[in-house]
Amino acid sequence: MVPGTFGEFFKDRRIQIGKTLRLFCEEHGFDPGNISKLERGRIAPPASEDKLSEYAEALELKRDTIEWREFLDRAAAGRGELPADLLADEELVGKLPVLFRTLRGERVGEDELDGLIDRIRRA
Image (cartoon, rainbow, N blue to C red):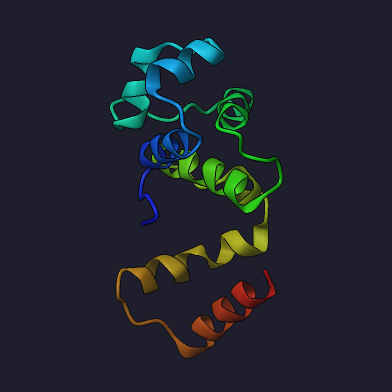
């Protein structure tokens, strides 16, 4: 099962590398209370790229892999944001309203939908 939230992803990965919460925190100098709150979704994921990188490395995620990117993307989503690298792409940002309407089940024009599908395929 793919975890749905940042906290679930974090906890599943920590367990996958064979670390209890206490051991994980002791080894990396993290506060167990804060990590527990993060895993349970009681606090938002950090916005700091440095802190996220520190967590990702502690979770043994390799930089520039799908798992690393998913970790950062889930953090952005957990804060109610879009990933910064996507926001930098003006063409993509221009197509987001079509995506949002489609996700809500609203009808969009065929040209708009074809354009969005084309953009996704080129990505």
